[in-house]
Image 1 (spheres, rainbow, N blue to C red):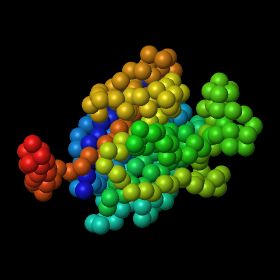
Image 2 (image 1 turned 180 degrees about the horizontal axis):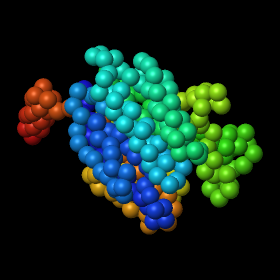
Image 3 (image 1 turned 180 degrees about the vertical axis):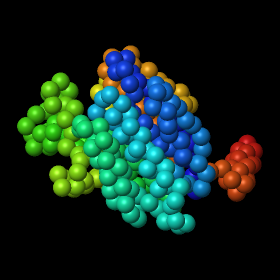
Amino acid sequence: MYTLHYAALTHPGRVPENNEDNFYINGAYKSNLKAACFQAKGTADGGRLTASVCDGMGGYAAGEEASLIAVRTMAEFCKNEKAGEVLFRDRPMDYVNEANARICQLREQVGKPTGSTLTVMEFADGAFTAMNIGDSRIYLYRDGALIQLSTDHSVLARMIRMGQITEEEAKTHPLRHQITQHFGIRPEEMVLEPAVVQEEVQTGDVYLLCSDGLTDMVDDEEILQYLGSDLSLTEKVKQLVQRAVDAGGRDNITVVLIEAEEKRGIWTKLRNRFSRQGTGKGKEDEG
């Protein structure tokens, strides 16, 4: 079994006046729309945890409201989750449809397009479910490698897959922020189809959920260096956010890190003690 440690921070960046990002983790989220920054850290025993990053769109407070609706709805679903049921593994579209309906209602109220991306990771029963809508990302750092688990729902990602442009060309393309799926799309306009990945958790894994305010400013190679460093989880989050700010901070930045550590119960401690004793005795015999 493993223990999940987490740290999270959302920051407005340099240029934007408002922070339209939000995150949810273990019941915590930024409930005050006027707050520029919000952070959380902690430990989830028992191998169960839900975390999310949502990047709001719309401006004039509509983006903040949309991402807040997304994480607040998640908090409601997680709180009301039935015993033994795993929400995003067993019935993911229940949440997606409800959050989208509420954000579509906001769109009607403000009279202008608004919406939010979604990334979510759910840990339960020794495995994780990773799901996303839009271009906010989920990464897995494992055995020294950085693997993108999420799928970018964007015009440029589709063009890259079709071989129309290169990844280098996409970095400065005028359509680089145009996404093809997000909360706030009416069902008659498009049926949302989240990308979903499910896999076993391995101790030592580090999971990164982030908005494009990080990935637009910091490339994967540099992210890999931070995740592989000896910094604490909280310090890694702070350093990644600061690096994005220093690189220009042209958008809001949200970073959530989760680390799976071996749970050190009494049997682990005894096993380690006997292992050390056995090794010591062996050396004495050899001498």
